[in-house]
Length: 146
Image (tube, rainbow, N blue to C red; front, side, top):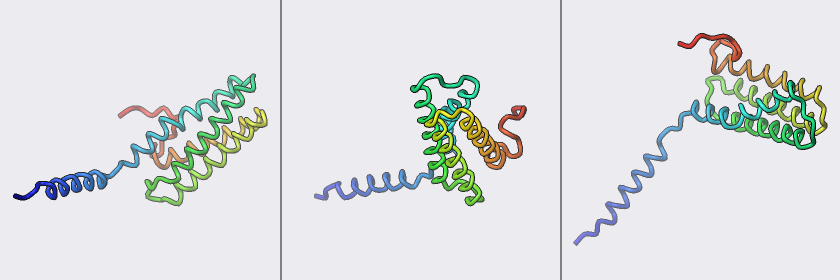
């Protein structure tokens, strides 16, 4: 009598192999990174412009958010999603650099430098979104839904 184990093993192996070969959608990953880390972290930094931090705890929170933004930029750089990967890498590195500048400004409790770093972050985001997401429409434009 034959044992069914070799057949069962092959079936499980094929299932696992097929699951591993299922392509992950890069746009979904990028959207997840934005939704879970980039947007909340950058919103916290931008809010500091209209509602400046008044406590050590608030400054520390800003520094953490800037650090999260920098790490998120590194995660974006790791994604191979763009036709022009070199340009994608430049945007990700620039975002990481300016997010680190915002972290330093928060650590030094320098609101003026934080605001300046925020402006540079917005310019980088706007340029990247223009090229990769909004296709010519800026992220703050009044684009009509399709």
